[in-house]
Amino acid sequence: MVVPGAEAPASGPSVADLLREGIDRLRAAGTERPRLDSELLLGQAAGLERTAIVAHPERTVDRAAAAAYEAAIARRERGEPVAYIRGVKEFFGLELHVDARALIPRPETELLVELAARQALGRLAARDGSAAAEPLRIVDVGTGSGAIPVALSTALGAGGLLGAVRIMATDISDGALALAGSNLAAHGLADVVALSAADLLPADPGMFDLVLANLPYVASGDVPHLPVDTSFEPALALDGGPDGLHVIRRLLALLPARLAPAGVALLEIGGDQGAAIVAAVVAVLPGWACRVEPDLAGLPRVALVARDQAGIAAGPGRIAGQS
Ligand SMILES: C[S@@+](CC[C@H](N)C(=O)[O-])C[C@H]1O[C@@H](n2cnc3c(N)ncnc32)[C@H](O)[C@@H]1O
Picture 1 (cartoon, rainbow, N blue to C red):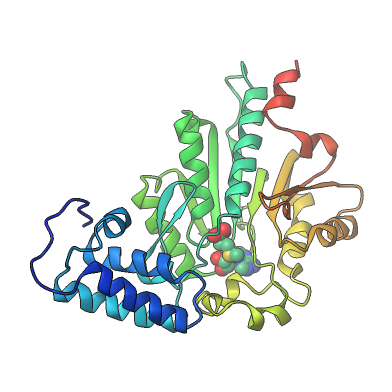
Picture 2: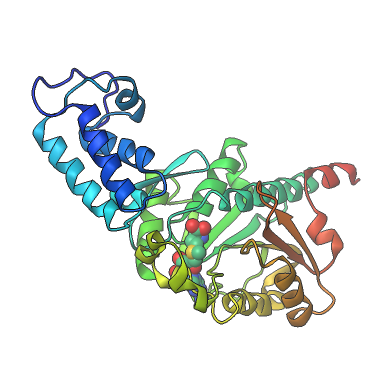
């Protein structure tokens, strides 16, 4: 347990010495952020907040903590991501358990959650006054650690809207589903999100108002050239086939049967796939609409796909303007 102001043990090496050694070793190993990684790993090993590590370099830690830190630095030297070593990753301001069963959630994916929340709010606002309306049906395809449904449910729950939605999440990997299950339980959402093992969409033939997906989108030939950290993540989470869009194209092909008439699909893509996803929609879903939203870096990141322009434009502003 992390105790920010806990009394420093009298013996053992100092924080400053341990950090210096860790930083030197990680720098020599070619790690991109040796100081940050060392601080996080020492904080984890010593049960201290990173702020306490930074503010009190003179404090000492006990020998068991120093040994745990040494082991963590050795793992990081071999390229293992800090998130896997610590077992946690922050996503959308929430703490998620992560391990090698699933992709480490990326900050870019927070845009998908924001857009999904906006789409859900807009659609629910449009139903105001119609008490008999069916719940909004949402599915997250390829949920991995469960990052998207945990974050989206938390956002909708803060607005008291969980009763108005039905959320499902799928993955083809049993390991990922088990991890997603523990993250949903840890956030009190086990009864809110239904998990199911599936190749893309659940077998149940129902339709969805929102289809969300951060599926693998790295071209197979690029996977071996990704940073070493990613070699610790499941290939199933990364490899998107010859041009990176193979799995996404398979999902597009399912939309005519599984996306509700006014529904929208939000698909995360690679920063160089903006034109390619538009071409894929034209090829697989002729006549459908597609708009690509950029991320904070200005790169194409989330494709919105719907039967028509109204479907991809739907959001709170537009809905509020409707009568
Ligand atoms: C890029 S990871 C994303 C994980 C999570 N959605 C996130 O954003 O952190 C892609 C996920 O899709 C899953 N996946 C790959 N192919 C799939 C398929 N055909 N059907 C369902 N899930 C699939 C992988 O197992 C992996 O968990």
